[in-house]
Amino acid sequence: QQQDATWGVVESIFPMKAVLVLSLFLSFTLALDKVYIVVFHRNSTLFERERHLNAFPMKLKHTYDVGDFHGYAAEISSDFIQKITNAQEVALVEEDEVVHLFEDACHQQQDATWGLDRINEKELNLDGRYTWTYDGEGTNSYVIDTGIYVEHLDFEGRAVWGINFVEGETEEDCNGHGTHVAGTVGSKTWGVAKKTTLIAVKVLGCAGSGSRANIMKSIEWVANDAKKRTGRSVANMSLGGSRSDAYNDIVDAAVTSGVVFVAAAGNNNGDACEKSPASAPLAITVGSTATSPSQDGVQIDTRSSFSNWGTCVDIFAPGSLITATYIGKPDAVATLSGTSMASPHVAGVAALFVGSNPDVAAVDVATHLNSVANLDMITYNCATSTSDCNQSPNRLVFTGFCNN
Image (cartoon, rainbow, N blue to C red):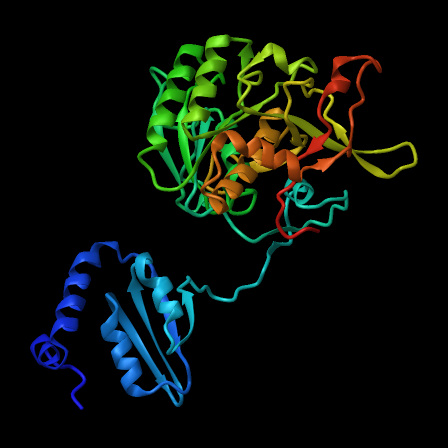
């Protein structure tokens, strides 16, 4: 028996059927986009199997013949898959899928900062461990700040310059704030999303200040640049000023366009609703926490004394005494405090989430982070029991990976 007969030979045996099969094949070739694995009954005959392969239009990829196991893999139109499934000689049909290496479910860092440690556990039990199942590879994290010292070794070459909006200054971080923030978002040792791409957007100069107009233009730039890159994008804004409707509106527009924006609540021990971009409805606004001993000497989560509060805060994260990358030399580190240090913890968690859930809309990321957050863990130490400080949501960010 000849296995690879030409269409002419086949047509001489089954003339009308062969013409019909060829016609159908040509008609449906463009629709064949899914690969299916088809297994024949073990008692099927060679004649039945060959007749089956000639009866349906498909793009054959493999045939399987091991003992009495027979089958094939092929691209098959959805118009025919049900007929193939119902064929008398077919035992089962499965859609092909991607198979991955079996790796450890969790990767673990043993010497993590207390901030990384805390966002990775449900109960306060600082043991120096940070674990993850996904490292943010393929995501983009914009750091709208003083720039990034991209040569720092802990960035592993993943930190790049995006744009500089500060007139009269070069593409360098001459302040250190942006480099520290970027380190918490995604450096190797100090970062949450350890393989994200870090993109420097310089809007604050060496003195740590810049104009609102330039910052608003940077938000537009980020929204447009993100559309040119592969992978999902998150932007961190560890900066702020007085409340501005224009400022808030452009942040919200950028989120609607697909970029997750995370903002620091501010360091005035005041109402975050009086600050922008902290008061932008679609920004994920972050307050700061510390750990402090309770009256009985047990460590508890507390609101950092400087942290802004109120209903415009979405979530809290560690922000006191956070160690991360710094400027001056390729291995420099510094320990800083502020909601500026809390915000990048959440930006890193957001990058992990959108990277592993790429179809989730940017406007829905806050809902997810809130849903998995540690609840009612924070002691606020508000000035009075009736203060708006007490209206802050009692949510502490949690990675959701490898529960400790």
